[in-house]
Image 1 (spheres, rainbow, N blue to C red):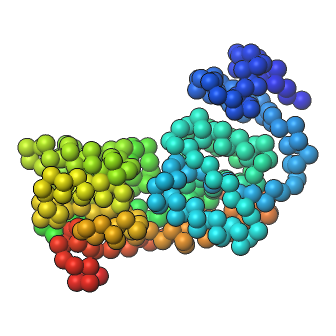
Image 2 (cartoon, rainbow, N blue to C red; image 1 turned 120 degrees about the horizontal axis):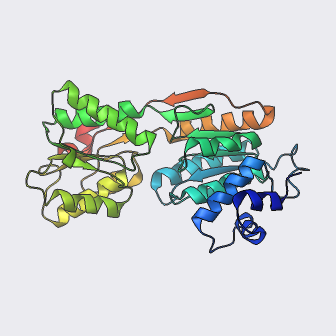
Length: 338
């Protein structure tokens, strides 16, 4: 039987340090945490003493990992998952990572210690090889963000198409200098949207200036920062594709504060079709994601995996996206364009 002493020896740390990591004590460095979690995974150590007796029992709890619950997209997705899970007799445990790989590993440990029956990941911060180790302890499903090589169920959207239809709309409005604004480089969602963006530009023979690329933009504040960079350019873009209605709202708000007219001076398109896109002035053109459909499919698949306890396998479920045209790209009233 693997003990905490074995973990401490392999990690090269004291037993007390390992204990602090296992019990989520503060003031333990990320490096030490990573060493402990790696040793635990390597040895197959389960810290919860009751986990073995619970191995064949169900908690009726599903964890859902999100990067930031304050993001309206993730808030709506979690709410839809919770509603569907409740119908199936499951409770939902919400786990925020705030984009921290160490925090994510801590949440994944819930599966290993049998405190949850399965985990739905709406995003991920670690390399897939680290996450894949936890498949030995229960079902994992990706919903929204995805890793193409993962041999697990993935519920996702056609993000290439989303980037394509949004960018094509801007081009059809006469724009040739179009900025691209998204979250992190590691995101497959963002990378696929960029493919669609590049595809639309290529079809129309439009070049792209990398100076028009803005990354790590997630919030209204980030959108305001993006606009402040745009307004200082000698030859600024005339339109911006963003991966978030929040970011789009930040760009529009800051643009108006500096006397720019939207869309006359700068057209802006968002993503998600959140409430903020309908209450902004001007209302924001966006790409609608079928969140409720994704949530229902994610819960359906997760419950199946929990009940039949089958080995992980590669499954893909993809839903379409829809362009919603409003004032921030056309200057027309909502009723005139929808």
